[in-house]
Length: 314
Ligand code: CP
Image (cartoon, rainbow, N blue to C red; front, side):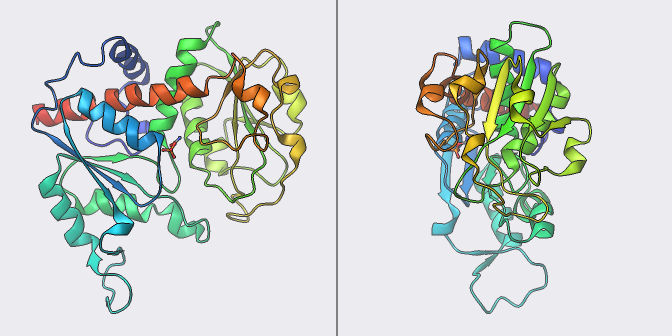
């Protein structure tokens, strides 16, 4: 794999999931593969899981890891041809090439503005690194996608499913902040690669990018959508059209044990307790949230392995 910026760059999803399952049994089995290689992780936004799991994955492969909170460094300019006489101190053209001197792989986390849809959809930060860096790029959550999270989620469903084609529902939840659509987008994309009876439920107005959901059934009645579900993935996102808005904080969309029934509960975390889902749901034995977070390490490790193998053979 040359880069991992979206799910479509995986060579083979099933093989990647099986590799992650094997790595989980023996995380140090390829601890020489990344020897003398460095992963530089760039954070434009906060992280707990992605930061620690990706670092752990890289160390399991014998890599060195350098982490930069970019907002504590020089403020980067991404526009081409601009006169840099205001706030930005360094252009991405130099920064990406220079970071490439110190890194064998660059991992980037850069959230959307949720103010300018066109700019967010252009994936300016991620694509600028793709354009100017000279080493592979790993997406640690960008403006429109979170493919490492989606791979961990696919791994979690694979481990816990009891039928070949489980019923999986993505259910919108209320939240007091306008959140990105990235996790939901990548989960929807991932479900299109997996064998699953998949649907989305949300209040009217919370439709995701129709280019992503065109193959997916949308059910506006949450109770009807959740009927006989095997897995319920709960997540808030802000509106796509109009962009980045909170239209509703309707508490009746919060996940409760009564609504969940016997389904397994999933969420990418962090989660606001008793807003997105009740304590009872989060603390129940059917909650997979800790397992999902654990699987972030092995999903990242499987991806890093593929990139390192390609670097070795190039
Ligand atoms: N789920 C996830 O990406 O968590 P962090 O934001 O803590 O990395």
